[in-house]
Length: 213
Image 1 (cartoon, helix red, strand yellow):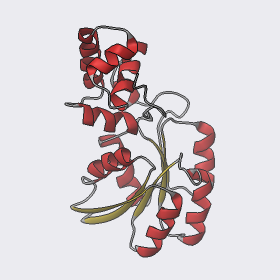
Image 2 (cartoon, rainbow, N blue to C red):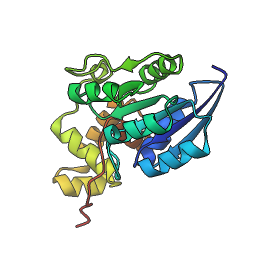
Image 3 (cartoon, rainbow, N blue to C red):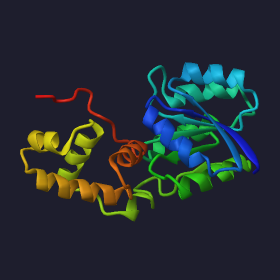
Image 4 (tube, rainbow, N blue to C red):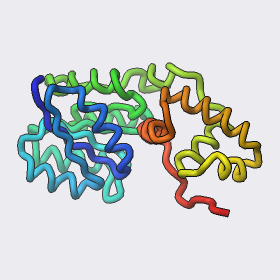
């Protein structure tokens, strides 16, 4: 495919940016539009009738993806819409396909897996994440994070320094550094920004309230 125009709908800017970077490999020329709500997505779809694809997050502030799918199908019947979710859920998958989704993709299936799915959908096929009753192949590429590593990851997502994470978890900074290194390896990341982007694509989120004490 020589060119593509894709709309990414997610309420987290870092996730949108991460997906935008991945999507650049879909075609020679890729235009990625971004929306943080379904309302914005509907407006952009009207403004850009030449859209090739919509990537729609399941969790959105004004309505969830399953509620938005019938709206897209009624207003833009020829526009393929892919539902994204942080985990593979059989019930959501079945509802998504029944509602007319062109695909259902787990957010952790990034890079090659995600691009392969999108290529199939742009070619007119329907794609569903593999192994909906359990973990995906993408999740099995790395060992699971330990409970302590997840807590350190949460600190990274909250924008905390090693010292702040150390104070929060009552562990030494050296121990925090060890866990941070493990988290970097888990996400195949070179810095914290890449960790945040990859983690949010897998469904992790910053805390609603950061502990500044």
